[in-house]
Amino acid sequence: MNMSQSDKLSEDSVANKEDTKAQLNPSDSKRSFCVLACDTSNAACSCCLTKQGKPVSMAFLSAGLRHSQTFMPMVHDTMARSGVSYDEVDFFGCTVGPGSYTGIRIGVGAVQAMAFAAGKPAVPVSSLRALAFPLLGQKDCLVAAMIDARNARVFSAAYRNGIEVVPEAVRPVADFIGLCESWRTENAPGKPILVCGNAGRMYADAPGKSGADISFFSEYEEINPISVAAIAEAIFMRTEPGERETCFVPESLLPVYLSRTAAERNIEKKECPDPMMRNADPRSV
Image (cartoon, rainbow, N blue to C red; front, side):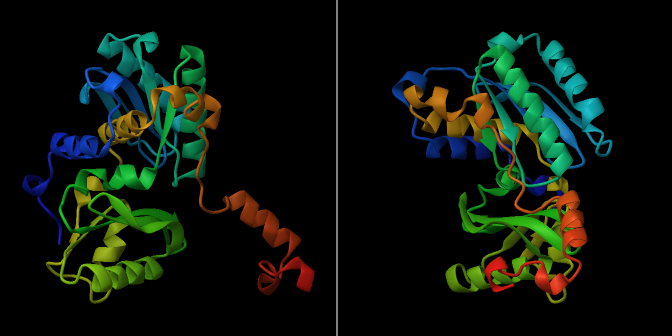
């Protein structure tokens, strides 16, 4: 079943909930951070500038995988509309995957360059957690985040009360559904499963899975950059001030792919045309 807009959680309330989990450093307690958060991990790309956890300026563009042409102009326009300079940004937040290989590379590379130029930290954010973030405040529900990985596979993870209980992986849709159902049966019998992401309908439409206890949130098919900013800020504040310079140096912002690219799979097919041998232990050949 699809949830209506009236059932959506307030992003502010969820962000506040996430902030309470962060172990705030005394030096941060009265600090107002300025965060530039970006996402290019799927077909849409977006960015958001926040201060004190509130959006100052943001942009969202769904024009297919044209991020190499659209992303940086969108960021520059967002910054221009905000009236804030890049030097005033305290740190950058960026989704690092999983998701589109090309999109992730473009976003990570662009944020690295901006962080280097500004001399500021860059905080990595999981695309799946950012996708699930608006729903993480729903107490005791299992939140299933699903991104289409093609060939009936999904990048997926599941969370309960903000804690990851089904780890991030690329797996067949049926396997992920089975993991979620098993976890719920063992740990939260009868509790609802809330599904989000551009592959979420595959869960809701699976045989025998339609009903009041499975809810697909079509309004959360894409990542909201406000969520990226909130998660990045929570991570940043949990980190001791003296460790931030080493933990979040721009060169440490690296993609998380979880599976091989199409080019890598094609090379493997050419080098080893027998599918039975592709994953064989070379010591046994």
